[in-house]
Image (spheres, rainbow, N blue to C red):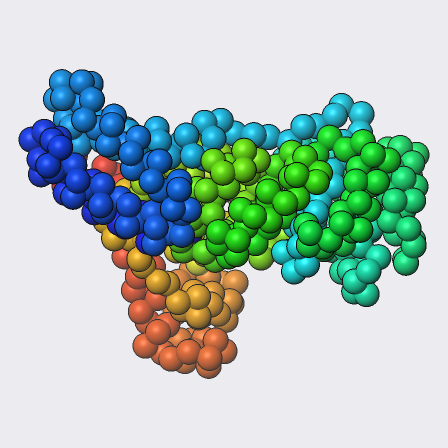
Length: 436
């Protein structure tokens, strides 16, 4: 997400570093670059106009003129104005101590039912909640089956009555939650257009019956600027408490995220970052701005690591590294831990300074990672623990077993041996880094 915008903004920032001071003449060229960057990212024209006018006014202000580093001040202005667009603080869910009721609404095909699964999983892991899904989409034949399948995968119960009155199903589902010690209820509703008065009235009836803490609109970020009208339409009829932007990881432009809050005053509460059931994350304006400006998002990476990485395994590997001992068994464990974090490209993009070094453009073939894993898995336990016994016959067997070549096996072993040498040098303190 935001790859193109980040690249263009960094170009503008790089250009301004060549100026001793910011003037009326040179700021025009920089702002033209910023304007184009935002428009190409599919940010609403009205938002772009306001944004660039505000940046210009502040960049030519007294504070910047007195600044020893105009470029750093310009970056600060960009950051502050982007935060104004996205909302200066994180808008979390309103959670009730006894029972939190959340209704998810949206257009057909917005990914609403899948998002319910992701949100239920998120609330259980992060907030230690015991959620219940209520199936109120009685119009789409496969909707209830889809929700039940998600519930089965996540071990979360689904309350459903098949085809019936959605208002009554929601009401009975709430009673079921109270009787079964569920502290969070997620209600799946049928996809509908905001201009369909009859179906919107049905949502209002559900709202009045269950009195939810949250009404969240699930919207596909790939819709671009059409999303603004949809949000406004739903908000006028229901008074939304927030939105969930799905497929933000698939949208390299990401402009809708920069327009939604400013034009609708409806906060973004979550964003979809992958198709997996753990692919939902809190929307944090500060972290998002850091990513847009190419500063990475190390805090989100740490949080993700804490969620998915086995702490005991990580501790054991760290102890082995500290002792200078590291074998293919440990290497295999590390590969599995990295895979839990998502694609290597996405991990790299979250590292500070990655875009400045061009690392955000690296494409790592997942097939290559799979081949490495296959080679290690084709080794016996003895071979993984003692790589020195890997002679010619063993390498031929491993290559055949992994569907690779002996050359690939040799290459992996050579890289592994090089890594072992570096670890021993680090332990002995003989490894010197430039500029250290």
